[in-house]
Image 1 (tube, one colour):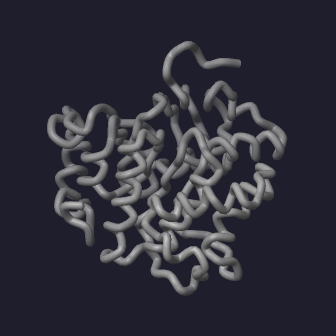
Image 2 (cartoon, helix red, strand yellow; image 1 turned 30 degrees about the vertical axis):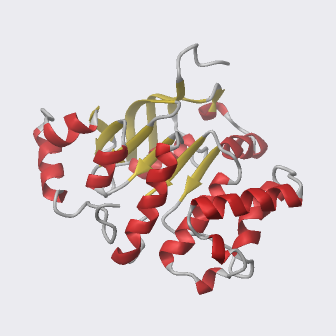
Length: 261
């Protein structure tokens, strides 16, 4: 089923999800167009990360529609179908989840060769190109334990890109990092977005979100309270809760460790 002739790659319509008696998503409506960068901001526990997990078929809502590139993700019932959507939608988590016994190069090559059936030499060639893109060319033969947290997160980004996804989801990718290494990760994401990568980012980096986003979405208590351009959300929002949240974080959310990058 095709979503339509428009440019949308992701469409969520009245998506609702509960864990037991706890309502986590209470009617989410969201559209993401190809080539756009969308940042989702809001207080902890507001449903931000759950939205990403719904898009990537890691959790399934009780009701509503989720369409990704023409596929009704909310209707997938088989694990093979869910794996198929994850080939097209990459996700980078807070934790790097690299295999400690594999080199950086092998961590990146593993999924394309095993899941996509890519030729090893072609996969290695792409992996080295991606390492150059995330500024880790010299670390191909290193092991994750020999890298800083920021370097491991950049490897995780390269690993996601190795699957050649249509869309990349970033779930608080700087939250577990030392402040001095946050900037190097944001620098890489900024470059990828400038190159036209379609992305949805859950982030507390307010100034970064303002700089790179086409649309910013504010969530609270499982609902989208407001969404619009960075100018609207950060400087002219009508909703007092949005203004309060943004002003409360205005001194925290820059490119820590990488001002001016």
